[in-house]
Length: 255
Ligand SMILES: Nc1nc2c(ncn2[C@@H]2O[C@H](COP(=O)(O)OP(=O)(O)O)[C@@H](O)[C@H]2O)c(=O)[nH]1
Ligand SMILES: [Mg+2]
Image (cartoon, rainbow, N blue to C red; front, side):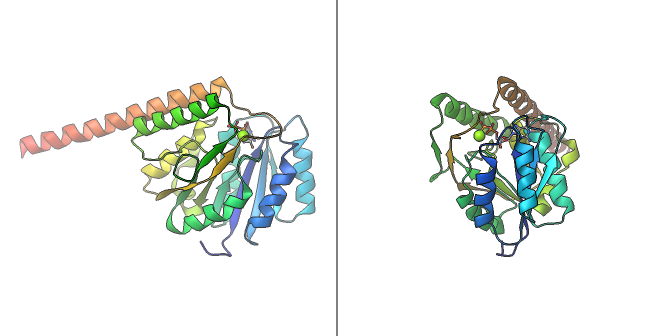
């Protein structure tokens, strides 16, 4: 996309007081001048919301959306996307607040958007890397991605990652009101819906580094939600294709 493309960077936060300021300042350095940054904070008890307000007071291009309580990553992003789409910008970018996603890689994500509707920062394509993640967490992530590929029939190597750029037009084509995913399977949900709505999906390699400060909000309930939702979506997709095949066979028999 062009240099002067309007970009909303959406950063969800829950207890990221040790990370937020550095990540916002680093993102402001590398994004095109026509960018805005939206922090979506779920009333973090550690005071992240107050830091976000201070950043918004200091910088015209930073805004904050305060939500009443911890509602999950999916709900936070949906609220952020609605805000960004209402503002009428060209692209919307997702990025974690904890430093795992490197702001220096933002220009590569945006550049790839000229040939795609959704660019996924990918740890598992050639050139992509994971740094300092415990082996168990990487296995969970790789296993989740393999399961999503098998169940949904998509070719993505990293459908669970949360460093990505959407064309605003692609987000508008997805019925956001229908999305029920609350946790991290929101990412698979969006990739799956974008794929089904005919969007061009491209993966670009990123380096994902384990956070150095603060704690991960990953939990077993997040994993369980992802597992059952991906299983249901996969079963539905297989049923639809089976029905199509049967209908085709019936038509051939009648004809
Ligand atoms: N607003 C909001 N942000 C969240 C929530 N859960 C996680 N996040 C943010 O989502 C990003 C990724 O979460 P993180 O705990 O680092 O997940 P991990 O990298 O998979 O271990 C971080 O910026 C978190 O602060 C939530 O319920 N609400
Ligand atoms: Mg993290």
